[in-house]
View 1: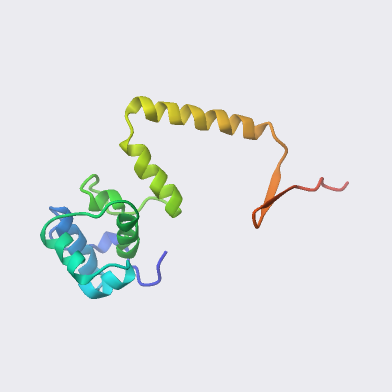
View 2: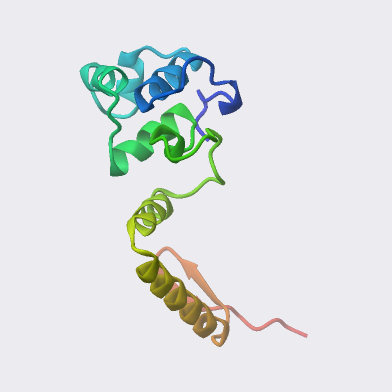
Length: 143
């Protein structure tokens, strides 16, 4: 979690649109548009457009924005009434989840089946330890 984040349950103000949610979360943290822009590597003008024109960024920018505001990305996109972030995900995990949700139900089912297949194969293998990109077998315990 970022050091400057505050609990998201304290987000106050009008949250009826995506732009208002961005502004409310930003002001709850006590950030100016410029400060938020610096934290997500954007511009003050872009933040202003999101807040006033009710536009929400996509992809990595959305994830950086949600992280900086300490809120659930789905809440910013008006896809959830819950502003509280789910368990902390890595950027790759968040990107995968975001992409997965865009797929048809049939494609989602195929992905889940493939993951279950891979997990089953993983269970059949001996435990492995990964260290800085190299893989080595875990030593056998001594008796």
